[in-house]
Length: 144
Image (cartoon, rainbow, N blue to C red; front, side):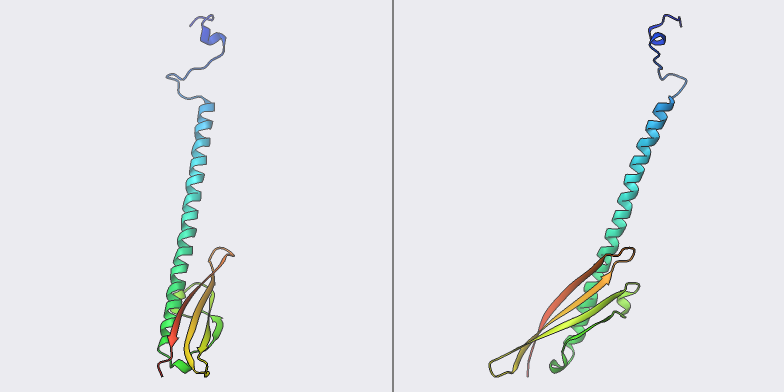
């Protein structure tokens, strides 16, 4: 190469057999770090969403189970309950409370016609201070 070569005069460095320049390597590492960070954030977010969904399914199962246990009780013994800590094996590892509210509907002579039962499950999601709750309800008719 002559000293009067146009590429030498303006100070351009070309990528040839000698490899990549330091600027190209730094830019490539920056792009790699940004995309790795985005991928890591996506995995953490997916794990959190999965845990919240799993807890919600467990809470719904617990509420359904409570309603089934109430269904086998005599009609007259179904009344308000809770809130109390969840000690059910279904909810292992999750701190929460359960309660149910009973609203008694009567006819004009004061006889109970039916009871609406609302079971509420509330819990703290592990790994965060976020609390969640859900309710499930049913109606029990007086068959006496």
